[in-house]
Every structure is written in C-alpha cells, then in structure tokens.
Image 1 (cartoon, rainbow, N blue to C red):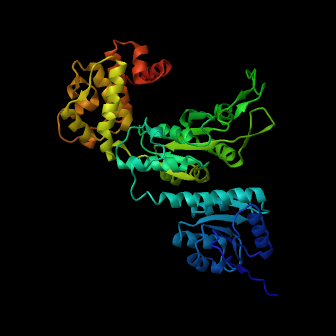
Image 2 (image 1 turned 45 degrees about the vertical axis):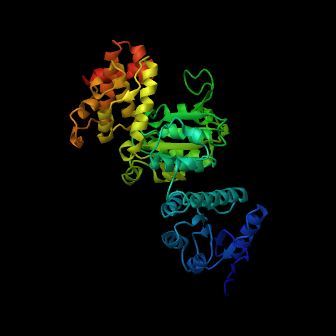
Image 3 (image 1 turned 180 degrees about the vertical axis):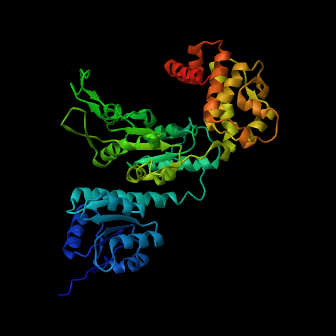
Length: 467
C-alpha cells in the first residue's frame, strides 16, 4: 500500500512550511493556523523535499516533525540551518524528552512542541517564532550602520552616556527587543552597564507599569534559593509565621533581572528552568499552583559558551533565556565614550561635593584615552570621583588623586597588561581613597560611592580579612 504524499503550496507567499509524514495531521495543523489568523501554510509530507522548497520560496518558519521516513527531522534541521540560517524552525516530537529538544535547539531550532499538539500552545510558539524572524530581519537593516539620530526614544538612554557607534547599535537592539516579550541575555564585562540597559528595556516595554526586580544569582545559597525566589506558605517551616512572596511573584507582570546568571549553583539551575518553561510554581509548603507572568532578562560577565562546554551551566536553561542576545562592548573598545563619560561624572561628583570644577586637563584626557579600563565605566567613575575629592583647583588633573588608575597613567605612555590591577583591587583602593578623603566618615563615603552604609560595612569587613 502506497503512502499518500502531500505537497501543497498556496498561491500567496505564505511564511510557514509544515513538514510531517502524517497527511491527516498536516490538514489539522493547517485548519488550526488559518482559524488563528495565520496565513495558509505550505504542507509537505516528504522530508526529502524540504531544502528544495525552502530554496524556491520565502519561508520564514518551518514546522518540522522529528520522526519521519526518508530523511529524519534532525538531519533536515541540521541541513536547513546550515544552508538557510535565517529561517526559524520549530520541531515536533512525539516523545517529550529534554535531550532530543536540547539537541534540536543546539542545531538552531527556535523551540519544540510535543504531540498530541495543543492548538493554543502551537499558535503561541508559531507566532513568537515568526515575530523573532521579523525582528532579526528588521535588525539586519541597521546592523550595517547605526546612528544615535535614528533612535526612536533617545531620551530613554540619557543615563547611559554614549557617543561611540558601538553603543548606538546596542541602543537600537534594545529599542527593537523591548516591545516584544522575549527573554534575553545581556553579556559584557563587569562595569559596562548591563543592569542599566535591562532597566531601559523594561521601561520601553509593555511591562513598564509592572515591577523591575533585580536579583544577584551569586548571592543565593542552596538553602535560601527556593525561599527567596519561590516564597513560602505560612507554617512551611519553623519561623514562617506568615506567607511570603518570592522574587518570581514579586515581579508579576514585570521584568525579573537575573544578574550573574552563570554563578547560580548547577543543582539549582533545573529549578529555575522549570519555572521559565512552565510559567508556574509552588511556594514552599504549599500545594497550590501559582501562575507567573514574568519576562526574564539574564546577564553575565563570563563566557557563557565556555560555561556550557565545561558543564557548569545547563544548555537547556541557556536556550530558554537566550531568545535574544545583546553584548555591551568594553569601554576600551569605544574610545569615543571615554571623554563624554569623564565629563558626565565630573559634573555629577563636583555637584555632590560642592566643588567648582568645570573641566579636565588636556593631559588627563590624553591619558584616559590611553588607559584600557579593566573595570570599564564603573572604574572610570571611581577615578573621577576620587580625583574630585582631592582636587583644589577648577581644572581636574591626574595629579589630584593617589588612586591607582591615575597613578599608573601619570608616567605617560601605554600601560602594560601585567601592570593593570584586577577589578577587586580597583574597588579596594577606591574605597580606601574615599574613606581617607572623608576623614573616615563611613556614611558620607557610602553616599559618594553610591552604595548603602550596610554594603560598605560588609565590604570593609572583607577588606579586613585580606589584610
């Protein structure tokens, strides 16, 4: 008995190709998509014809069954992403195995759905995949050249002082991704402004009226993770005198910023993954399911690909978080920002300290441009803040501070990599410099440093242990 073969291509330029050897399922999917307002899809039951059809038609998305005769879906996916990387793929499997889903996503699949197909979930996944294709297509228009003048909401970025074109691209990416509901990962070295960018994206999103919650994943211990993120019911454990919302619920209808995501203990990553996938959780000590509506923005200063290779970070968790990715370049790679930022910090810290310092000495500007800033924008602000405290005149000079960064610049010439302090050393020296300038007044020092008094006290305890 011959298997019925189907190859149906609508006259209009449909964005979707559905591939499955079950003709009945193809027709069912077609009816589901059309009833949801999606253009009539192309239908194909012979997997060996996929590449040929994709080469001839402008498909944005291929819905691909993994288990098929002739050519298996995983093999088709690999070839498809190699030859047509811009086309989004959603895979269909009859077995709900994380391993097969992870493998498919490793080869570039956007997402996966499990048979029997749930119409509502299928429509959501397809619409999001199509939206992602449109987003990427739109970005390609300005990735070649980005300009601050073309931003739609320039005032939203006023706190991130920037003049370099590298940051213009970052701002355009933020504007484009903000209105969507995609999870995203922001990468960049420490001190580049990842949390600040995440806040801007939240403010530009449809969730702007909801909360923005920032949590440092490195701060969670195994014992406190579930209580802090999931919350607990009254009486869940000794001392739980009342119910408590965790960060997931506190961020409801808003954005949850997961800073230093790669620092989360590997034993806890699976629990985070489940919440992101299922959009639901149980508080500790409760059997009631609580649905959450939260956008996840994760950040890391580590090489996340290396973390995955070394099995310190789960690949499937990364795929759930990394629907979109923005990388903030280090300050040393955007020289045009250094002078603008230096003047910005000069104005702020001169005003805070009631000093009439209105300019930077030319030799200081020259040396700042030569310095590689291992601590990025945060280090530059520390340098300027320290110098302002010590400056006696109206022009800020490099000799006005004993801070390590200025000291290394004062000799002129380029700084060797071996002579650069690590970020913790930069922070330590700056804290000591500010305390010296304030005569040991911790309250004033904390205000100048832009941190709470308790945070300063905790850092000072850490310094005492290293002495």
